[in-house]
Image 1 (spheres, rainbow, N blue to C red):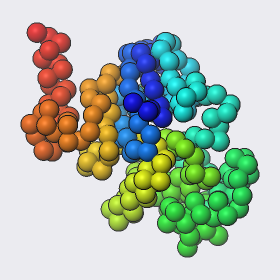
Image 2 (image 1 turned 180 degrees about the vertical axis):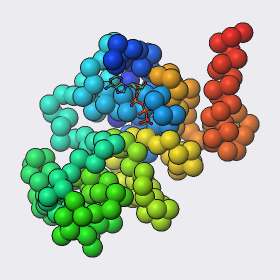
Image 3 (image 1 turned 135 degrees about the vertical axis):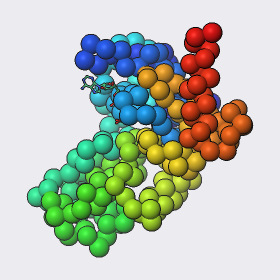
Image 4 (image 1 turned 120 degrees about the vertical axis):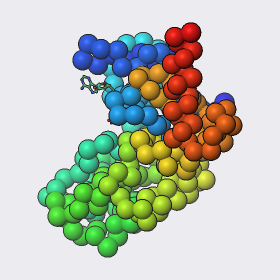
Length: 241
Ligand SMILES: Nc1ncnc2c1ncn2[C@@H]1O[C@H](COP(=O)(O)OP(=O)(O)OP(=O)(O)O)[C@@H](O)[C@H]1O
């Protein structure tokens, strides 16, 4: 598989506790891959390992053919953290342009990213005066500046209304169609159906790595939330038998 991300036997300990227990998975190029699982299951930790900011206890993480965190990946990988990382005393446009400078990109690219997340009308507003949902979209714009080849988005649609969520997912698919690889976390199961592939994680272990259709077929249920629950129950009964 021509993977944008290749994870092998990844082990991570945080706070003296094992939180990822030997995960192996691939994220194919030009897809929207969803990372789903309950709160505390290890989604953010896996994403941090992919962008190279997480100390790992074992295994390997390769990104675009290089070890995760390599200096040369800095311009090629965009990362949206869960907490908006934008400056409250700058406008939306100024934030995006500042990130563009850091990435060696131009103003036009910054302004396009602001438009792409639906914030053109608020471009000249101070981030400190935005709503929570607008603020996280401002943060998303900064992660998308310069069209990175891999975009890692930690819960990008939290706090967005249904219309904006649909717009953002349409945007993600347009980016994937143009060749960008997206790894998107969510704990909203209705978003799983919007992904090309799913990584389902629970308690630091991968429960499924497949397409939504294959997950439905394997479990015999149409609803992905129910399918996920079945995979967990099957895993538990195998572990105890
Ligand atoms: N800085 C930290 N120090 C110690 N333990 C941590 C730290 N950050 C996370 N953990 C633990 O690591 C585990 C995985 O956390 P992680 O943030 O990766 O989960 P998550 O699936 O992203 O959760 P959520 O959906 O709530 O964001 C949890 O048990 C969490 O308590």
